[in-house]
Image 1 (cartoon, rainbow, N blue to C red):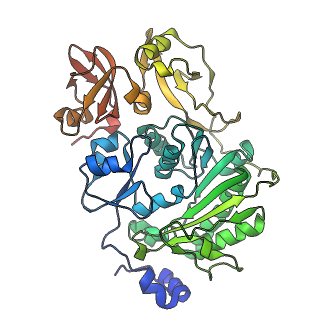
Image 2: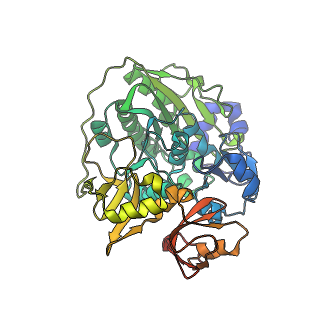
Image 3: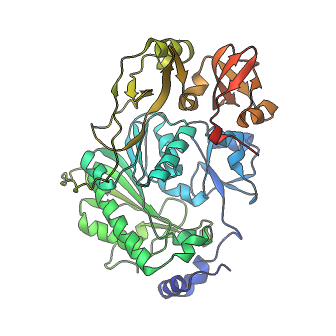
Length: 463
């Protein structure tokens, strides 16, 4: 049996009584590992049938699987490089699936890194509407940007901002908001030793205060009638049921939705808030349920809710705003797009420094927030010719008119992912998309029957 930190165990035994062993005994001997399929690429059954990975369906999300081989490392799989799936602990896929996202919605993931839940929301949008993925930590925001690029998301804006600045910029703008809040991580004890080592009441209180601030900002960002899903990967009362109870006291315009029919986990705990509320409408995933530990609540804003004044934003020092605006469309881009991506040729193009960017077709209101990506960077004009980006091929590679078609069993696939030149068999001279089983692996340039490799060095399978 896993040995929990002493203070945590004492608290949970006091709260759970005889149920402690039943709920906090792990269902698997090692941390569960899994993948979540990117619906922008294919259906889950395609991955189950064709990836060659040892998979079992997950109870937490229809698009997720559990890896049945605990030693397997799927991050080197060509389909992972192609953004077909995201490596994710299975129960972590549960919150995004509860948000009821449909094509055309304006969706915000407020604490989005490293990007697994954002990619699920993007898949639900199917390229329509708008996904704003925000992360406060700069290094984690860059990882988020890279993951959404790999997943081929065409309609995402990646921000690196304080949530109060978001609320001031976009009051009552979003149809759906996900808050996977920074937390004390008690559900990650077994998976991450650091979580157990740093567990303390002071950390819990800090995370609860931060979660309260983020939730209040989320309330301001959500449009009347919209849905907010709040989640953590902790068991702490102050961060879970207590947090939701306090939020409902501060925000009577919100109603707690019933998650009892979601098909996984167990009801929230009734003895974990300072006042009586319908805690059983929340959802908990305990170690005994096959996950590491999660809490979820779903809240809906009244359709006639009044717009509250936005909170005062706190601007970070030493951070500039990225400028961008409509670009005069270069002939080099037009020629390139008409030849290889005709469906993109008439799309509006923005300039961001030297880059040409294809923005989402649903716009954000004007703002001066730190933006890492707004749509898809298409490429640059260099020496009177257009140089396409890796992101362009990852978003629309399967629509490219010049393609090199690889398969999992083709030795050229492994060579491509090592950064090597490969033989051209289906692509003609010039720029081409390289695909594995129809899924994009970036772009290359064909000359003399060889494809020069433009797969980014930092992404290659080396060693």
